[in-house]
Length: 435
Image (tube, rainbow, N blue to C red; front, side, top):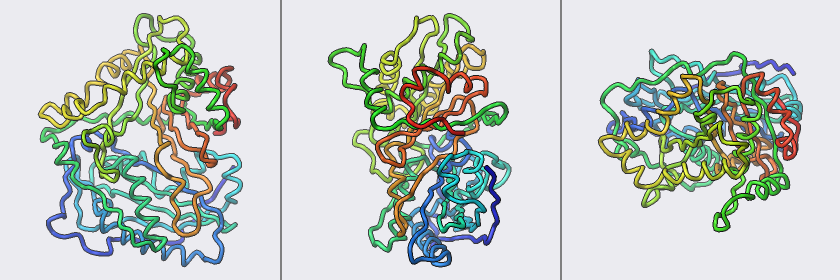
C-alpha cells in the first residue's frame, strides 16, 4: 500500500482568550520531568460526513480548538528543557492535508507506516536543544470525503488520560455544547519537581530490525481467554479482566518465541503496565487532572520456572499493581519522590543491560473514550495509537466494535515471526495479524 500526502495549509491556532500573566509559566511536576521526551500520537478516522464541506470542517475544528486551548493553555505553549512550559500562547500547529488514498484501503488492512504519515510530525524525532511545541494537529482529507485527524501531544507534559480529556473537551466545543470541561493544573504542587538535573536516556528509540503488527481479539475470544486464565487461581480470587488475560497471553506467547535464549536463574521476562494514579490516591483525583499522573507496575517471571501458565502471569501482575497504592503515591510526593519513582525499574534496567531479561512494556487505552470523540459529524470509524518504535512494546486499544481489543505488538523481526505463529495465541486471535 502506498499513499501520498499533500499539504494544503498550515496555521497556528492560539487560545481564543490570552493566557493571564500569572499563568504564563507552567511548572513541570516530578512525574513530568521523568516522563519520556517523545509525543503521544493518536489518529482518529471518520467516514464522509453528510452536508458539510472541508472548509466548514476546518473552520469548526480550528475555532473549537482555540476555545479549548483557553482552558488547556499549556498545550499552546513551548516546553523549555525539563523545568517549565512557556505559556505565551505560541499556539498549536494546525495542518490541513490531502491523502491520496481511499479511507477504505487503510481500514481494510491497516499498516503502521501509512498511519504514521497522517500525523503532523514524527513523534519520536525530537530536538532537545530548543523549545518544543506541546502539541500539533493534522486534518487529512481523503478523496472519498472521509477524514483522519492526527494529534501529537508531548508526553513531557501530559499522559494518555490528559489527551483523552482534551479530546473530549475539544469535541464537546466543536459540537456547540456549552459544557465546560476544565482541567486541574496543579500537578507540580502535588508532585514537587526536582531542582537537580534528571538524566533521561535518549537511546530507547531504535527503529532497526523491529516490526509492529495488529492482533484483534473479539468479545467471544476474550470471554474464552478469561475462562482459561482463571484456571489455577485461588477460589477467592476474582476472575481476570480482559486486559489481565490478554496481557498474560501475549507474555506467554512472547516467552515461547524467545524459547530459552536468555540466561538461567534470573527473571527471563519483566512486565511493566502503566497504572493511572488518579484513581489510586485517597481521595481520588478529578478525572480531568492534567499532566503525567502515572507510574509503572513491574512484575517478573523466572525462566527457571517450569512452563508458567496464564494464571501465573495474572497473579504476578496483580501483585505488582497492588503496590501502586495511596501509600506509594505519598512517597512520590515526599522528599525522596525521585528515588521511589525510579525503584520499580532500577533492578529491571540493570538486568536488561546485562542481557539477562527481556523487558515488555504494556500500555492499555481501554478505559479512554477515543471512540466518543464526535466533533459534530459522528463518532470515529476507527482509532489508532501508532506504536513506539521500541522492541517489546504492546499498546492495547478498544476495537471499533466496542467490545473487542486490538493489540499493537512491536517485536524483533525474528521474534515476531515465531510469535505470530504461536498455537495458543492463534486460538484467540479473531482477525489475522496486519502490519
